[in-house]
Length: 481
Ligand code: ZN
Ligand code: CU
Image (cartoon, rainbow, N blue to C red; front, side, top):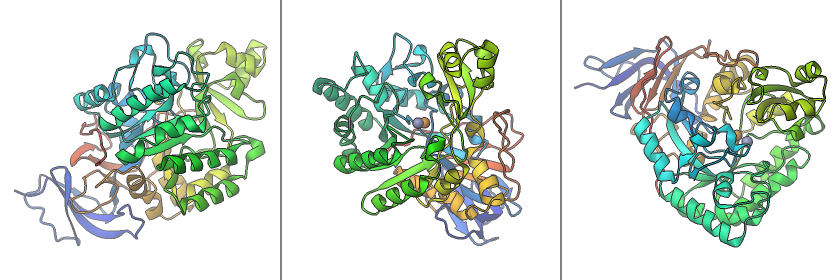
């Protein structure tokens, strides 16, 4: 019997950052079986032979920052991600995870970004893991447990610090979840459900990670004026907890902070010399989260991404809505509640500096349930490859791919993934480096990218352009402990 799939006439960009090279690659079962010089792998009795015609074959992309906890269950084909070449998503970021939590009343923001109360049905992480196994989404899932989720589960009043008893309960839940297959822990210290937690509370939880080889990811307390203090807090927290850390969607938010990525990256680089520290970023100068009147300011453009009170407001500018209603933007934000928004609050030069920084991984932070989502949901990876890499020359293609594959696989401890190596998992993406590009825009955010030619997940063909359906071969990725 021959191989299951043979890719021939492809250029391998292997995830390490090393120069592309011509080679053939064969897949058997769910693994990369052989990599050899062009023409050396027999194709005679292979089940599928894919002629790449000189296109690039890379490890499947790892979306390091997602809120796909529920999307992988209810939208299991995950077209938004598969169509960009993403084969693994890291869920549970920003302190919000779907499990372990059941709810009998509406979830407080930003937990409502994941769904309404009927969506929170997983008493334990094991229950969630079982749902993933049962559904089998198109992408692999590596899950973080959110601090906000644990607080909502264990505390009657989330606006205060947790008591020792509550911390104990959260520790038990986190330890159990890690034992059941979660790969780490996240905070969203910026948000109302999480901000009352001081560094001691975070350390009491994050220190459990060491035994599980886990990772700590944080949406920091402050990405604006206080960004340097927040980076310091993250560094100290990770050091005290003896854990690797990831600064989520790094940015310098608000016009008064534009340009400060020079300082922030210098601080991160210095700390990373003595402790495991990384960061993720998306390739846009606009962020997106819940709409909170407190985040509204007149000097930045704000677009509504969803509103339960006024659904048709999605996709409209907040300032225009306010004008129509004859009120201030803050008042309009109040009337739209609960709601989400896109904030045009970053500096393009910062975005580029952060993306190009060697420790930066690519993470979409896409919000899959928004009525009018930020285009990062459908376009992050192809925008990095097309716009920032090819058109703007921000970095070589090999470096762009490393930021999406090898680097995140190492950082998140996803063993035997992220690189094209014999014996490694066959998560693969074939793309045309000359035409790959994002098509999603702020006006029309759900457009499929161009130039992704073939996606393989765990050794099976998942999607090719024109395929109406995605074949689902993803699984929950656990840590080898
Ligand atoms: Zn966040
Ligand atoms: Cu996020």
